[in-house]
Image (cartoon, rainbow, N blue to C red; front, side, top):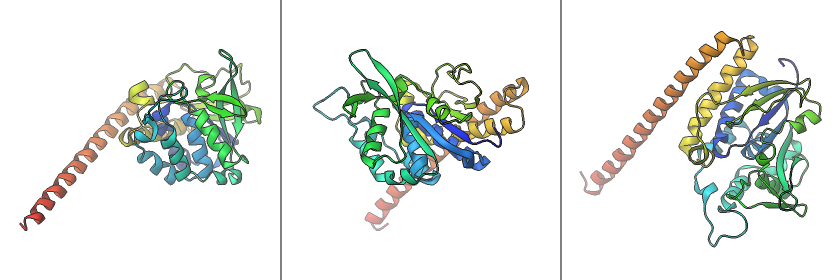
Length: 302
């Protein structure tokens, strides 16, 4: 793993996807990022994979730090199609922050999967390589991959409706395995059981990173597109991934003594992040109130 080309697999998970951007920071700091030759993502993991093909880390971090719920959860009345929320906010976000023409020149191969709908009960996973696709088609694939059933409308691709890639394959290892990669880092932000079955991908070594603490479920996680939630998850993803990679490099990953210490350290990290964010929020509120007070004084020439 230390010298081989790497694949990066990003699971789906909606607003919890900010965790994967923090993980990317750790991959960069440890030098692992330079060996990643291909990235595969489902749902929000596909959006993050696209970020890794079109932008640098700083741009991706700023995008997530400035997201708003209305970009993802705006209800467009009257309701049309098979989804509740409008995709207009996400379309504007992608067009405003991702230069999809850069995908063709990306040094990495970028994959996104969708769930293709053939008939009433016939669903199957479909995998797309985004490199060398047109910007409009990439946009369609990303919208389809993140089209959570009921929440968002399906997207027509090649004459067939497609929806969230995580429905059929939330850990899209397959396209990376198919191009010959046998060493992979998986950033899994779901609570699903481990799906990395050795029999399915023989001869493959995985380093899997999971959140050390609960980062939310449906309403407080998957549908949490607040900047505050994103900042918290990015920092946790960074610390969790850094710890995991360093443990792998030292040969400690998976050993009982490491697992015990890691659990203690992870809890301490979680509490430290919470305290730092509370302190930051308090300072922000104090500054805002001071600005308001200063404006009142100036108004009355005091």
